[in-house]
Image (cartoon, rainbow, N blue to C red; front, side, top):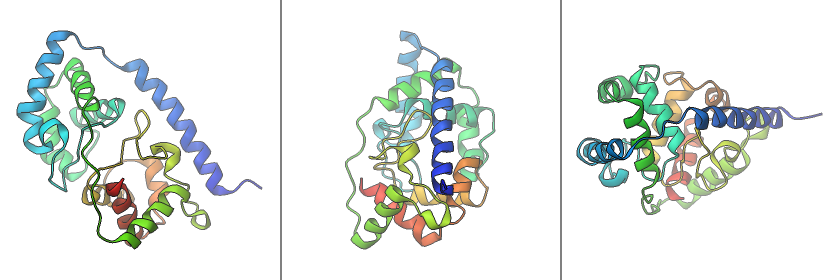
Length: 212
């Protein structure tokens, strides 16, 4: 009999393929002037929170350097149309994204995706990191949680609209996982995959990803 974990993993992979194709097809190709305007916006506005080239040090604000282009586009459009409504979204990003054109969104995504990711962090508690690595790579079969690698890649590099998690701030990842788990951030697939995991396990996953 096929396990529930394998079924969930297969569904997730199917969603990856379908969503990725849609995202690629919908991508806007910015012209040179739009790219130039986006670079200025990224450096003068986005950089104030996300850091230079998207490699910021604030543990509650995501690093954007090296992030999947399609993911950035999807999230910026979700902020713009207010369909992403977690607290930080409506407090900060709704206003920032409200005036962005599709061309600027595409050029910002292109810019940050091309930046070199931040150096790997050193996480102090090796046991926590090891526990997080096991959950990320193997999931929790007995509770129906498949490996995270199916969507986010074996190295946490992400895949199309599924974000790069490697090198992301552990605190930010933990906050987002709790928001998703508690349905304060809309992500039906992720809610189903995280709802059985404890806060300690989410902390371990976040620590491992920060260390990658």
